[in-house]
Length: 171
Ligand SMILES: [Zn+2]
Image 1: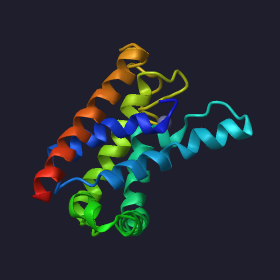
Image 2: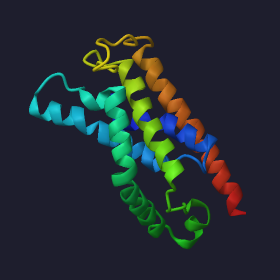
Image 3: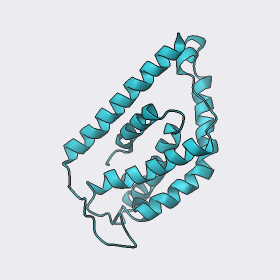
Image 4: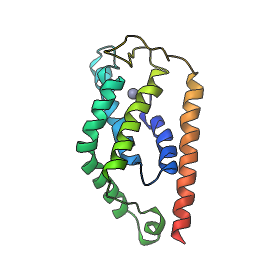
């Protein structure tokens, strides 16, 4: 995905589907960490820009590292979010700041694997199954517009459901 936040759409839908067992923050964090790779190679002008972190093996290792290194950072970000809310906002927008091991793991691994899957549909410089197999069989399996639409629609649905759930909790 040329813009990392497109990846967040399916994450919002997963969060709406399993709010207690899935950490959206960890999902987003893992996606951002994986996209440090192409950003770095883009800045240094060194092609290909999608390398180990954009393989299923690499994303698994990045996700595992994110569970341990990223969990405190994500918890801190959630505490920061809560601290910015006034009393009225806090009644429905405040979030749980503790991230359990299960939601951290489902968020991080879903973030890593979905990142590679979605990116492999559009980036010709990826070998998602490396080092076990070369090539990218899913390249252009769907059109870029459809892929982006999928991310936007899943994101909008997820946000709508989460918003409705938060609104009901408020009363
Ligand atoms: Zn990427």
